[in-house]
Image (cartoon, rainbow, N blue to C red; front, side):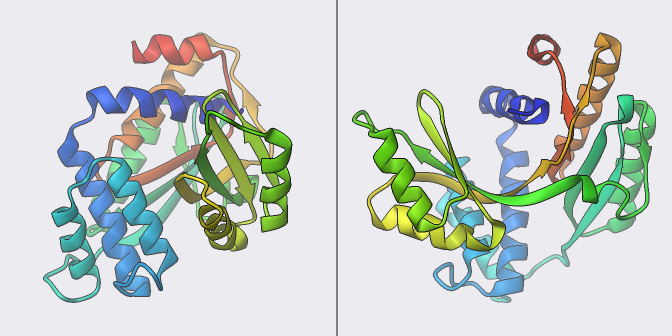
Length: 251
């Protein structure tokens, strides 16, 4: 597991306790609005919208909030003019950082993102400067049943079109190509598997090892501030570091 994957897992666990619900709800609502705007308000015909709804429900967003966001995105209600933007740059230690945003004010978002990079020892770059360092893939999280046959599951997942399967103590990660994510998810769900999430993700082709604790602290501050910004939906980075430094930073 890459350093940033470990960081994301630790952040997710901490967010359950620390994050303000209003911020989470706002981020999830924006994601739903954009998905509905681009592909329509029917989740059965709009896979991206279905993904956004599933993630919102997993975060505890009330159904009323979800429905309002769908209506805004599909034109049934008043809607802010949200657009999706990607910012790229380098963090401390030469780590590649890619930031995906949904915003109704690109000048505000660009200024805030640039200030974070500058404040925490990085540099915001031009479009395309780091995206070639990542590849897109589909990731499906499946609940691990009490009675689990690893060989049988692996065979079923591969037959459904999966690229790989990673198994932990309590969960299974099914890896797919980005364009087969929906088909594999549907096949697993149809066979009775409990899919907890399915989404496209960016993973680094190579990683930068952070060997200085001071550099690690600066990098984590950069990622933390970016991820906590209202307009930021996802942050990707290509680093490895001591997991104890991550835990120490959050505690």
